[in-house]
Image (tube, rainbow, N blue to C red):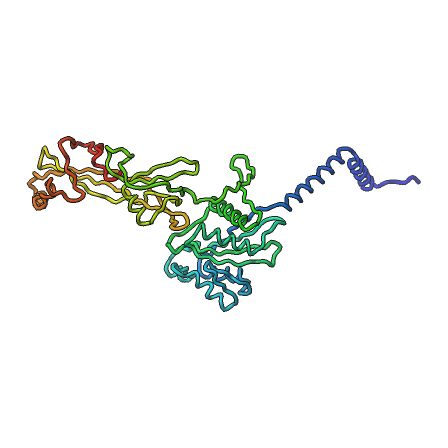
Length: 407
C-alpha cells in the first residue's frame, strides 16, 4: 500500500525546505552579514557611550512626602546623606534632623497644615538623579562632586542634600533640591534649564578627569550633535563689563550728564546702555570691570513736575513721568532672577487754571500763594521745572528734550 502524507506534514516539510533554500541563497548570506555588522556597531557604540544623565524623577509637595523620599534615598538611615554644607546624616535617629534641615528660612508645610490654611500644594523639593550611560561609568564619588558643583553654580541660594547609591548595576546619586531659596526666589526648571544642567554637569566631570559628553537633539532634523567644550560657560544674558562711569549722554558734549555701562557680547560686539540710576546700581553692588552681569529695568517710580505758563500766570501744567529703576545680577556672586518690565507707562499731562472762583480752586490758590517761592527763579525746589521763553508749552510737550527725567 503506497505511503500517504498527511496535509500538515507536507506543508511543514515544504516550509522547511523553502527556508533552507533561502538561507543558502546569496540574498540570505547578505542579510546575515548585515545583521552581524549591525550587532558589532551596536556593541561598540554601547561600550564607548559617555553620555551624562540627569532625570527629575518627581517632587515633594508637603513635609510628609519629603520625609518619605529622604527615607528612600538613605535606605531608611543606612546610607550617608550629605548636605550642601557637607553635614553628614546617617542612622534612623538622624532622619528627623535631616528633614528639619529643609525648614530653614522657608518652612515646608505638612498636608494637614495646608488643608487648615486652605493652601494649594506646590512642588517644594525636586527629586533629581545624576548618573552616566554605558560601560564607561564614572566613580560615584566623582558623580557626587560634579553634581554638587553644578547645583551650587546654577542655584547658589537653594539648599540640597545628596545620597550615593552604589548597590545597583548603574551607580548614581540622588539629590533633593529645595525649590525656594534663602533669597525667597522659587525656581521652576524647564527642559532648557535641564539641558543646560546636563552640559554643566558634563563639564565638571571632564574637569575631574572623566570623559563625559552632553548632546542636544537638533530641532530641525532630529539629529544628535555633541556640544563642543569651549571652556567656562556663563549664565544666559550675563555679559562681560568693559567700562562704566559718568559722561555726557551718547558722549555728546551738547547733551546733559548721564551714566553709562558698556558690556561685550559673546560675539565681541560692545553695547552701551545709559541711565542715571545705573550709578546707584554699580555702587550698591560693587560692580567691577571684567565681571559678567545682567542689567534690567524692573520697576517704575512716578515723578510729578509742575510747569508754569509764563504767558498766562493763572495757568500751570502738571506732568507725571515714570523714572526707570534698574537692577543687576552678577554671575557667581550676586545672582538674581530678574523680571524685566515689558510695557512702560507713558507720561501724563494735566492743565490747572487758578482763576476759578470755586471753593476748591480757592483752596488751591491759597496753597499756591503759600508756595509762590516754588515758582520763583531765585529759589527753585527739587523736581520743579521752570520753562524759558524758548520752550513752547503745548499738547505735545513731551517732545521737548528738556523734560526727560532720565537718559
